[in-house]
Length: 151
Picture 1 (cartoon, rainbow, N blue to C red):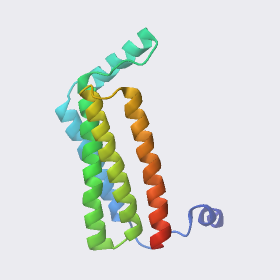
Picture 2 (cartoon, rainbow, N blue to C red):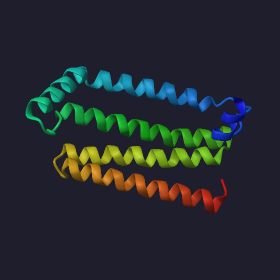
Picture 3 (cartoon, rainbow, N blue to C red):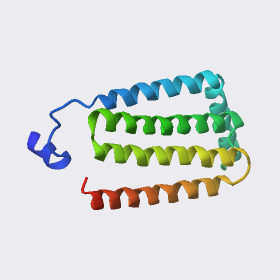
């Protein structure tokens, strides 16, 4: 059984990845910050889902939900950049640092597009399209950098 796992996922790491625990802790803190900044988050979410079910189409979420999304993605993106600095300073895992950089860019980009949507600068369709393009560009960038730098 272990041979199948090694074949699919690679050889098991010999060292512990403390950054996984750090990431989970940051995630819990971000969720706490979101709940503190928007105590009505779950009721707004429920009301929004009910409105969509009643109307039978996609409707704009309440501003509080949009704000919570901006803060959520923004804080997680910034935390990825902090993890890059820590990872390069402590762990020197350039491959994971490269991954964290790309995920940080994606998350901050999502926050920015949600911010634009929340301020009625772009539509939800354009927000989604921009996010998809960013993901595609980052996948290409990550692959090219891994190939060029041999990470």
